Length: 184
Image (cartoon, rainbow, N blue to C red; front, side, top):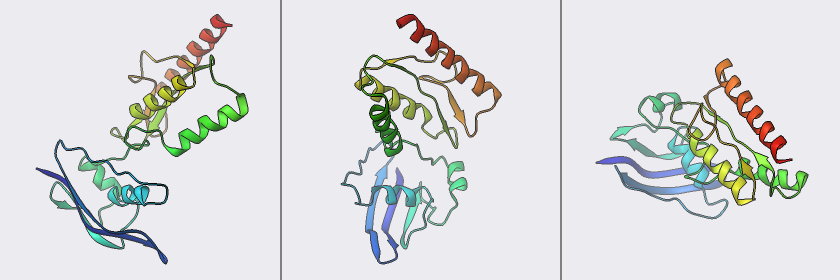
């Protein structure tokens, strides 16, 4: 069964052709990787697929339904969503944050950290984002503090954190502070 079909998808930004006549399909259970250098149009493609950008031309079908002009919030009701990570790789913003932290604090090895995330909907990829952040921390030799409630890897919120989510984040912060104190 076909889950996603893209036919002749193109996107122009003025005179710049970000995507030109892209076509592919993905069957249920099939995996497809979109790989390319910076500027190749990967993010533009995902922005077209999830409705954040309108295509210049072409069609997008999700389980046989034409969703080319469908609003993003309506697509989520069909089960389509976008994670803040790019298929199990930290987003550029998260990588930049970690890189800047290294510039500011020096080596991260032996330092203690934790992660939390929010997303626009339940399928927003928050747990994947948290896991990727924690993985990046581990690569740099950090000691990480996980969460035993509020998410599998750390606190998760859909949209702006409510009072309960804030309390879970504060509790994690307290646990991190206690761990830092024990290790000092």
